[in-house]
Image (cartoon, rainbow, N blue to C red; front, top):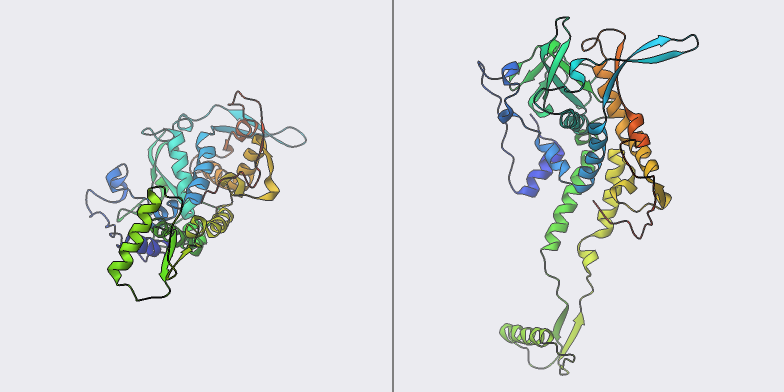
Length: 366
């Protein structure tokens, strides 16, 4: 599989190329036989490089916390004479425990993770009820799945040729989630690659000591390298000893270093790149700690609404709509997230508090 730009930049940063992941051999391995064999599961180099950027990690965790903490509920629709009305019904057994081995909080968060980074996600049907509909599922990491008929990065519909760990899967047993938002490792690979390069430069500069000044001989007999080193050492020793006054003759001058820590750590560049990655991830900048004048004052409820509207809602609708399709539920039954509880904060005990986010008080977080 060809490497993405993010993978290539990640190899440059780590100094070595990531080992290629080999498909499992045929026979007892690969395909449906590999479902649940977690030692074969991977998340992908491109995803791991992108999540190493703090802004992307923050945006991912914010939206994953929303999707992973909301409950799912089922309903039918009924015409009440003027409009279609939702009638909530008893859920199927899997709605509170989609996978028998993990919680919904864990599974939904990582299902979102695949949608966020790659634009697609998969659940494998591990058991069915007597009526033929799914009863339990297990997540298939996107990096382990190959779409032979639609290699991407844009997917036009469900794939009919899915391979897991090197063996073909029966697509009737795979629930395919297709995100309305293209995966970020493909959507703006250069923005992520730039952030990786910037982090590399900042790390390199952070490890480089900054000299407080420079001693320069301007006259007299030129001193040798050893004499210059002894002069600098004696100057540093006097400063460390707490001497308040330094004495130099007419042949030596001292010039203070103009480089400051904020320039060495590329603060302005980091601030701009962090804001650019907020645009990439569709998360309001102030939620990632980026100073934005338009959001000087924001309430907790307003922040939740912004995160839901601009960030998490497209992914939540993708998951709920896919779980409402006829290969998962009978016709006329639907699934939705209980977003009202999240937006109204019914699970909190404190009153809504208005907080002041002045640009000067917002910490930098890339």
